[in-house]
Structures are given as C-alpha cells and as structure tokens.
Image (cartoon, rainbow, N blue to C red):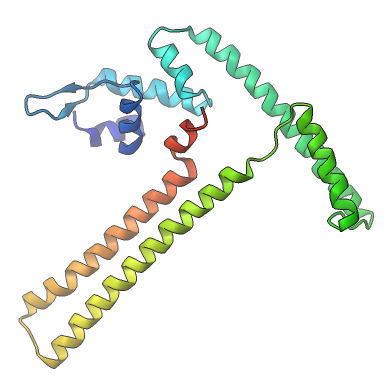
Length: 217
C-alpha cells in the first residue's frame, strides 16, 4: 500500500514514518518500480511504535524492544521509574508554586529583588537534590521555530498577493483573455493556499515533532 494509506491507518504523519525508517524501526519492501510498498505488518509495527511513543519511551529503547534487544517488561519497568521521577519533579514545582501563591496572597511582593533570589535558591537546591524543572531552552527553540515558519509564510503570501494584484491592475490597463488572466492570478492564489497548508502542518510538527523529541535521547 502507499504511504498515504499508511498515514490514515496508523495515524502517523508521512514525515514521522520516514523518520522511523531512518532510525531502522521500519523496513518496508519495494515494488517492481522501486517505490516503497507498505504491508499490514508495517502498519502494525507503526502502531506498536506509536503506543510506546505515547507512553514516552525513547527511540533507542523502542528499537531494543522491537528488535529483540530487551523485553517489554524491562522497558516498562524503566519507564515507570522515569514517570515516578517526573512525578516527584512536578510535585516539587507544585510545592514552590503554591508557596509563591500563598506568599503573594499575604501581600508579599514575590518577584521583588529581595524575594526573587530566595525563590531561585530554593529551585537550585531542589535541582541539586535531583529535581528537574521546565526546559526553558527547548520551549524557546520551539517558539523561534514557529516564529520563523510564520514569518517565512507571511513574506511568501505578501509577495504572491502583490503579484496577483499587479496582474489584476495590468489587466485594467491592457486587458488579456479571461483564461490567461485566470492563470496569471490563479497561480499566486494556489501558492498562497499551499503555503497556508504547509505552515499549519509545520506548526503541528514543531509543537510535537517526533524529531525534536527523539533528539533528546
């Protein structure tokens, strides 16, 4: 079957399917003309990968499970340990957040020069004890990627809009056949639509892109 059918059946984007192939987790066959030919087993393998990724299992551990390097039980026990650590991290963040809220309710300026160092000291002490707080760097990278994609799309849309407007203005000065005008204006309009569709897809990928997640492991 073609990759678009696999996308529908497995609920995984084409980009991520290609990514899993690059990682050696999926090895589709080839048709006589050299194109990838996916099977029902490939769809099943993708659903296995999707399940484990939904549970936050790293790519390398998924490879070990699917290729026989380690059992599912060991993988799940390791994941449960990670979740317990994350749970402890979240509880510590909640504790400090509640302390901030309580102090503010009592009239304390929690973000003043006098107070801010105390709060940061608490966080740093928790980090030294093994707690992990929000990855600000990763969040900033995602915002930058999103902003770059939006800016690039905006520039292209403006240029295509100007191009279409120029064509329409030129037609008022020197009319051309309707079919030619439709072509001249339709091409920029089609490009604008394509840019919007690609932008929406790119933003979705940035928010939960498999490649971004996998790069952490």
